[in-house]
Image 1 (spheres, rainbow, N blue to C red):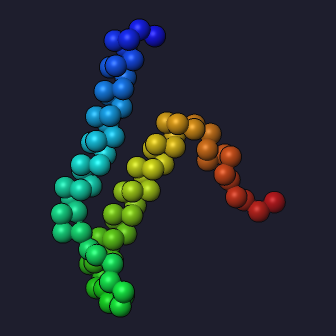
Image 2 (image 1 turned 30 degrees about the horizontal axis):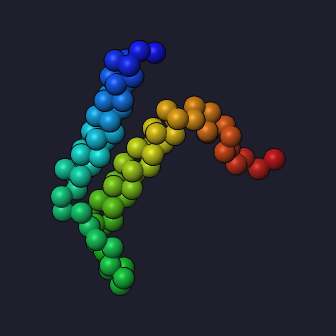
Amino acid sequence: MGILEFVVTIVAMALGAITFWIIPLRNNKQATRIEPEGNYDMHQLSRMADSMQQRIEFLESILDAEVPDWREQNDRTPG
């Protein structure tokens, strides 16, 4: 692999990662803070769940790229 191809690959990966971080941050400008009392309304809980789902999907996409068979390796079906 040539140096130009390597640099292009690194830049593309960095831009992809930045995109995945900017979109959720832009959507969650009014992010709900976790309160010790735990008094939330359904709208706040829904936003928190959406935020967690986006983060999980992002982490899974990283794992899919880095370790393609991680799902099979961590399958916890009772046997």
